[in-house]
Image 1 (tube, rainbow, N blue to C red):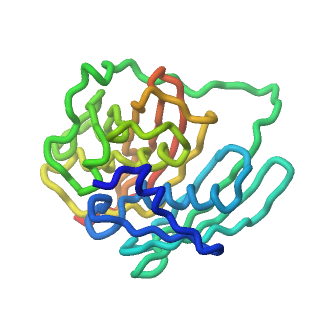
Image 2: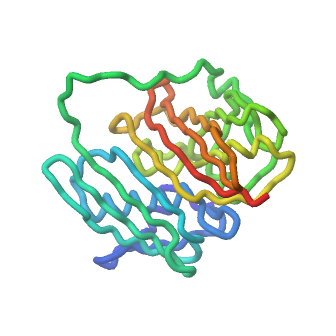
Amino acid sequence: MTDFETLLGGIADDGTAYHIAIAEDWLQGRTAYGGLAAAICVESAMRRFPGMPPLRSAQFSFVGPAIGTLTARPTMLRQGKSTSFVAVDLSGEAGLATRATFCFAAARASTLHRPAPAAPQVPSWEKSPEFYQSKLANFVDHFEHRMAGGRRPFEGSEEWAFLIWARHVGAAPASITSLIALADVLPPAAMVKFKQFVPLSTISWTIDLLTDPPRTEGWWLLSSQADAAVHGYTTQAMAIWDARGKAVAVGRQSIAIFV
């Protein structure tokens, strides 16, 4: 397998765009794992425009399959005194794969303060069982997954939620890019309803960062809660905490379910 840090090290810069070949062990069906595509977009933005403030918000539209050698083209949309907006188009052999928009913004003084909810009380990762009972996609082997609560995929449950401990195999250094790559590792929460694999595809993903820089002891606590499933689409709320229980990010996804 090609670990995450080695994969990023293989990104080539031609001066206008970044190019990277995706190995089969990072595939999710016929396309690159969505979290990896998102992480490549983030990495290319930060490489093209170094010295920006921390990433605060990211939006990803998964337009088509990310196949073969991928090309990321970052564009500065607007750069202000404390806030910068960057767009990235990620394309492959099948055309446009992912369109991303990022907001990088410096911290500012404010009288308003309300901390995000602390992590739920769960067993430690050492005391949590393996999450997956069968492998769903090639990329899964690049992460460790422990069941901290909720249910497993294909249990036909009424709970509609996943809660797991996860980390990169080899414990990749905590960085915004490695966090984005891991943040999409959970399957859609609606999969808990089915008793066998069903085809699905993430349409869009928004993630808002609550702290900078991200720090953890290798493991992150991830939750996913489906809040609607209508007309062949499901939406879900997501959250991430560090190993000490501090909220790191919240997000939402819209997913097409083909059944």
